[in-house]
Each structure stands twice: as structure tokens, then as C-alpha cells.
Length: 304
Image 1 (cartoon, rainbow, N blue to C red):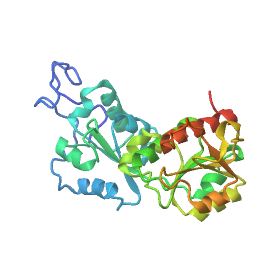
Image 2: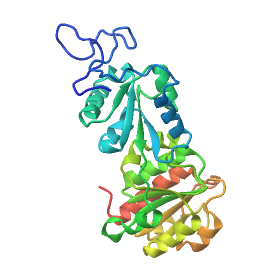
Image 3: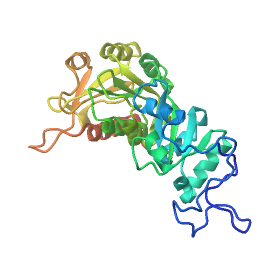
Image 4: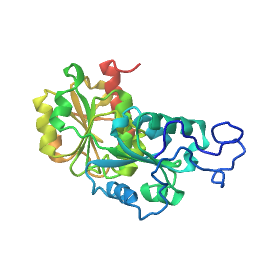
């Protein structure tokens, strides 16, 4: 584990930090300030197994976060970070060094690891030399809707969306537009999937999440909180610019192929459509989410 005050690189002449002339990945690259916990050098280390279990969804309490940007968001809630693994590559930028020192100062366990181990701990080779095991924070859907500030929930729910990148982008968009929560239905890819987490760019740490929600629960939870169910449809809905989209609202986004499932369409208080140029059948769900979320934000006076 790294102690506060650790730096990547070698010390020369009493100065700290990575020397500008130290080549990335060179022999000069070390992590100083290492405690009795030695660097992780084997893919068979039990630590790696913990990451792999989270990546596979076998660990229902944890998820994997990769990259400097996402972990900068995670550093805001360091109590959710169980473990961080970092290679010397993470210290090759001022931003990376600042992040590592911030995590260490917050008491987060940071372990040095080889690039091979880091690759095994994450789902991508573009990890920027750092990955973390973080605690999930799930909220029951009814609470997600009922506990919104000022009693005006603005919840985005992805239903039947199978692409993790789209789910993550929808969550990030909902966060950016000022939503109070994000939900995924049971037949939707998990927002804790590593590809989805990467697409959230750190919003997964900010926005309350309910995942694996049954369709009936989406309907009943919205009604219990007096929130309108608004379904996005590709045609025959009210043009979104003419619709009343002020919260309390639960926005339903369906997959491109099947759309919002019939039971929820029947229960919806309003169906909205994004008018498209002739010949264009539909928008990608993430693009539709951006259009509708920011229209809700505008009408609710959330836009700045």
C-alpha cells in the first residue's frame, strides 16, 4: 500500500517526483513509500480474483472503475473505494500524480501493480494505469422516486437497452441534465457493467441508481410518488417540444429495436416523439436521451 507523500519515479538530488527525462515504463520507474504490502506482480494474486469477480457480475456488492477521470469523481466519495491498483504509468502526468496523492491522503488502499496485472483487473487496456474496486450503492426504485429533492423526481429509466455503452451514456446524460436518479429494468444491461461504468465518466458516483427493476415496480413506484410516466416512442407521440415535461417525471427509454415494452406503454401518462427528417427511422437511445433530458431540464428551470 502507498503512503501519503509517495511519488512515482526516482528521487534524484533530494527532489521528489517523476523526472521529466525518465522514460515511461523504464527501469527508473518505481513507486516509493511502499509499505509491507508488496507490489502485485502475478495475475494469480487473490486481489486480481476480486476484480475479476466484480467484472463478471459475481460480486453483487462491487464494481470496477478504470481511468483517471472516473476515479477523480470517485475520490469525492473515497469511502466507496475499496481498493486501487496502479502501475507506474499512472504517475506519468501531473493529473495522475495528484489523483494518487489525493486517494492516499484520504486513506484509500492503493497497491502498486504491473501492467499485466492491471490488464487483468480491468476490462480495457486504456485504463491509464489505474483501476479501482468500488462499492455499489443501490437505491430501491420506490425510494429513488419518493426521496427526490422538493418532491419533484426527475428519473430516467432505461428499459430493454442491451448495449452497456448506451446505458452508461444515458446515465451520464441524465446526471448532466440534472436528473435526480437513474434506473434500469430487469431486462437491461447493468449500469455496473464495466463498459457502462466507463461510459458514465464518473457520473456513477454522483447519481443514485436502481438496477434490475421489474416493469411493474417502475409503474407502481412512479404512481406512488405521483410522478408521470413519460415514454419515448419513435412515432405517433406528442412532439417533445410541445409536451409538458416538467417533473415529477419518470422518463422511459427503450431499446432501438423493441422500444418501450407494451405494458409500460399502456401505463404511460404521455408518449413523446422526437420529430426526425423523412427517411430517418429513429435515433440511438443515447441521442434520444440527450434531447429529452435537456428538454426536461429546460422546462424545469434546471439548465444554467
